[in-house]
Image (tube, rainbow, N blue to C red):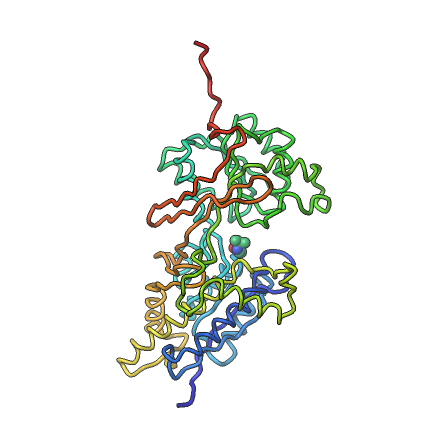
Length: 431
Ligand SMILES: CC1(C)CO[C@@H](CC(=O)O)CN1
């Protein structure tokens, strides 16, 4: 039987200047998944899944024009894959006009968790708010009920802080001060000292993080009386690189001293149980091996750690294609009962769109990024990981499963002063 083709559009940030150019590793990962699902005789039998890709440079404007090209040029597309929060916002807001599902493999903005604005959006990349229940869990574990927030004035951090404040209200954690800055954090950090902040959650991109850390050093807002929560997806030695280039006035030694002991939270994007076989038949380490092969062929010097952007998120793109293939497979079976197939889909056919929506909404499989399942708002349900920096390297402290409220703790934490820093000045009454 001639192979019929099912077409999907792919919008990948590849060669842009700003933002996240994660398509560099995510597009090869998506192509690996495409080859794998098409090789499966038990999936989409009689059909081949084809991906038509273009570069958005992580620019919403270019992303929109790429989307229109994909939609107004044959063959008709059944669904769109996209990356970058800004591009996903634009694409997902428009896609509903064509009854198209949008699967985002690289979008962390909390604003996307909005079914009113984005009725057809799903994402294998967790929202930035996934860190918040983990932060709260750690505060409760260490008895911190008085915290401060320091954030960069960027949309993703503003909406993450709003979600964190809601969690704090619910759990009786007092926020003594919330300081924000555009690009120079010096006043904000000085205000933290004035408010006697001791447990501080920091939300900013990595360049701003280096500026913050140097101010923290200058104001001595570190050491045995302070606990900092930073974001865990900066590169490992972020606090001692690019200091000259970015005009950081602290030395690498001073930055290391200020960074000692800080905690980080991040969403898990690679299945931790590296010998667990996933739906593709691979373990996440098998996937890493094949991805590295593909990236070497694309010219990246993997063996000298020259990874392309998006390497961390590559499993999310790989699993996004599997989620599409499984959803299409489920939809085909359903349509077959009424003598139809996905070939009957048109941009005005809401009925088939609803079938595809329902199929994605009920997704649940073990991918290379872990269990793939979505919340009612289309958000990826993900585990988070907690690490601590000491002796200049990150040590895994544990994992948190928000759904099950289950904290796996490895008892490896170490505190500069030898005990858990208190969240406020402790007055010792001389007896
Ligand atoms: C963890 C990170 C770096 C957060 O930003 C995502 C990109 C975006 O949200 O635009 C990619 N993954």
